[in-house]
Length: 110
Ligand code: SF4
Ligand code: SF4
Image 1 (cartoon, helix red, strand yellow):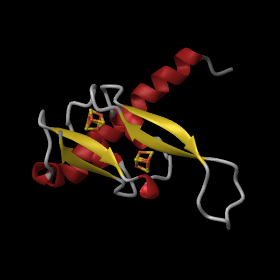
Image 2 (cartoon, protein in one colour; image 1 turned 45 degrees about the vertical axis):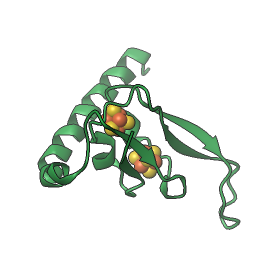
Image 3 (cartoon, protein in one colour; image 1 turned 180 degrees about the horizontal axis):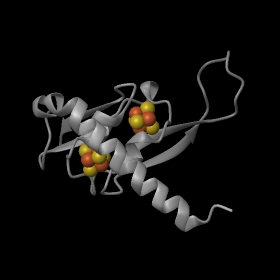
Image 4 (cartoon, rainbow, N blue to C red; image 1 turned 90 degrees about the vertical axis):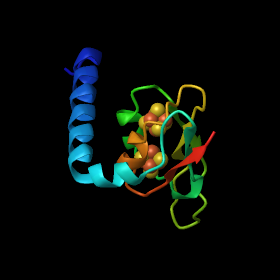
């Protein structure tokens, strides 16, 4: 049976895998992204699909997921997850921007 410890280890390994892959594939993009102390991440809600990739790569616990009703009448699911940035712990590291598959996250000035 999978234990919480197993899950935590798998999550940590996955975070490292994603971070390394992103660093390789998107190093150049990161160079050109605004970031650092004077910036904070921002999620455009309508673009977020609640995939959880950003929370996996954020080392600062600066992203939380919440549930929100879907807008689309075609998809009959009662709720959908969305990500939200917590401004105070966000360090402006930009990892979440690189991890987001839908380009829902941008860096803005604080
Ligand atoms: S910019 Fe860095 S610290 Fe801020 S929410 Fe994204 S991953 Fe977390
Ligand atoms: S990675 Fe992007 S789409 Fe996925 S939960 Fe985070 S903001 Fe939403």
